[in-house]
Image (cartoon, rainbow, N blue to C red; front, top):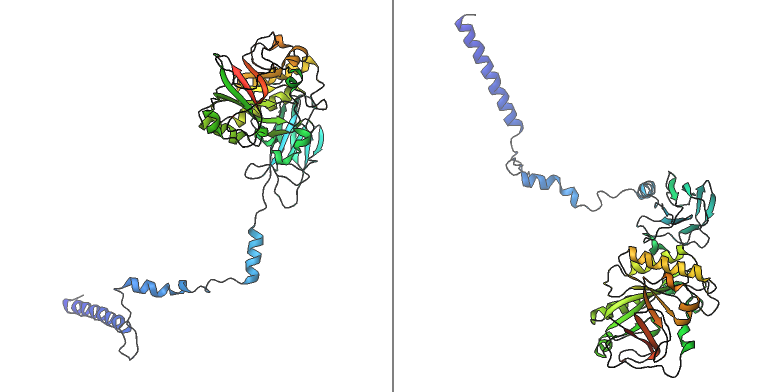
Length: 407
């Protein structure tokens, strides 16, 4: 290509490019018509506000009502149920729980325990107890429940052959508030020491001794002004934390326990606790001690956790126990309390220590004697003495048990 042709070619290309630029500018120029709006690419904020204006329209995203119902029903998830189980000795304890770990009540659940059989939650409290079952491996399956998702895989449980004196982790699933039972038939402990009292019983504070002065209380003392109690010279208090129902066998929290232990502690009074037993086996004694230990977990105890061994009017479920079984119950209770880091102790009257327990087997546990005389006749070893049930203390509107302890 000669020089002249090449120059013409370059000129033609440049002309085409210039023409293209002019066409682009012309097609995008602002129009000068009245009422027209100039759009500036230099103000992106205004431009963004313009194209987002529909977001301010509250009806823009309104779904069709029929479609809304369909979406809601299709995406709703049924609540899920869970199985939890444990074994103490030749038994299985089953809980049916919700997503918060709470027992689900009001549903007659069925649980298959293979190969033993099927068991029903008869009282619909979310708990099923399978007693007297052979040691070994079992598989639990929850029956279908309308409106709930259930576990798809069986739960494996190993049933123990020997009892361990350790706190039951899930014991609070089996504990009731007093409003859930009938106290008239379940809270029927009788003070055996009252039958052996004589006219020498002291009903006031012992003076001039080297023993500390204390009281023991339960719901029967009602509201207590613990600051007044402390000002009256009370140095320690043994507080009932609960009891086993003498009729139903249910584990029940004393309704004043929390208020009493907090009030006494805040008043500077040293504390211990006691539990009224109606256990008929070592397994039940471990349950009772486990409950007491769990209730005391957030408090400091200066004195033992005592098992209160008394009668329940002659008709209590444990009133007819033989000495050997009752002694085993006390040992299981105290050993379980010990495994939880507490001292174990036993409370009873002189007659029961002599006739209803093998006391020589219980010497390592703190003895709390109930005997209402000026001088007790009990010849065994004891550290705390409940010397009257007819005491009066400023800050308590009812009669109250008075105690001495030799430190």
